[in-house]
Length: 565
Image (tube, rainbow, N blue to C red):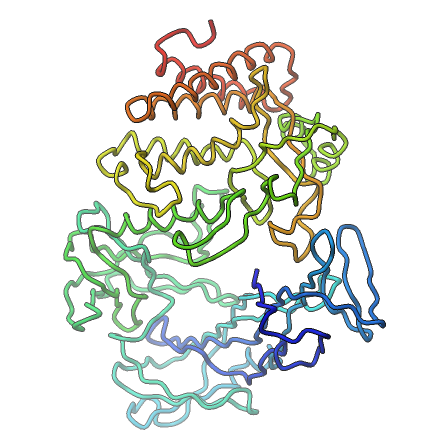
């Protein structure tokens, strides 16, 4: 969420017509032109722009109307929605987004008579040519919330496909004219060595030189025009982006029909035939583009020894940025954020609830509202001063027991590839200690639940607010009540598995700390075994059994003894 530095502004009042919050108005233009087949020209037209709302101090005026509906409170000034009030003292205003843009006429866009193409260098287009057919696909590329009623405006990307009888020729220049002033005239030169085409797809992470498979794909779905067919055996090549040299050549091969059902959810998400461009036997490091004859090129991608290391580094660094109970600050990140959800700061108090996560998760048919209702209904006056840590997810502030899967994944990487992950530097606040950074990150997720552990060994299912976040509130501004779930057998078993795995990883690195996690895991296992016989598992019987088995396996590996004795 953008945060505005109020020290640089005079905010005695907010005028809705201020230039600072008005989105720029621009006419319709073609933002990209390219071929998807020698006889099909694609034009991308983007409509609309957004200036996002931001948080500023709220200075009330006498005429302001403060209104509330459900969780949200907002201000109406001069008959116009001003924005949401956030925080417990409602001293911050989250202004609404601003949207501007030219209207887009789909009837004009979809008519072949709206387009004519000519060329002074290509004889096939010496006389202006209209397309035989026009197809279009449109999708939102952003969202502007412009009113309190959640009415939104959406900037859109429209891709129109001009299907012609004639094919475009490499190296020639063309002019596209639009009737009725629909769009300004467009000049483009078709260069299959340089033109980026959406039809050519390649993994943007890249490849290691020794990766066993290196593939790109050729396919196009044209919205109303459906899938686009290509011939097999089309020539393709790799171009070095630095030198322009062609370093590899091959031929396309049919991969899958657009009618063939894919394994995921019994559908075909491409909705078009796809063709494979196989360059597995190319292993030279560098930056390249895959280019297809008569079509164009992919976006650049890398081949190099560090490709997958770089992808891991970016992904793993994301965990630090999702941490709860810690400030994000330099030198660990340039994205700074205040400490949030830490009881010592006085903003958040975590109350114990009698509701278990197992109960709300296993009740088939429960909505998210039902879950919140049950959680709040179980509120007690018990305050948990050590209920902090873990990771946020999915745009809200809950931290649930199944987040421990990420901790187990970090621990597994460390065990499988110790030579690599013993030395990975994730630039964490803990990086100066003697433990590997991936182990430190695993413990961050785990320690929330260790702090929540009850005297009898039971593990609560996590921490959750009374509802989804209020509109406009950031994590450090939470104004809803916050609760910890009560312990349950399923959550306890998942904790046991993770704590025992952590203890195993720590045995040869920090024996004293390993003992802490081992003892905690054993107490949680004892709780689970006692509680299992009296718990109605509902739809979670299988999940609980799996968690119990995993817990038992890790305890056996850690201690060598009977984990349920």
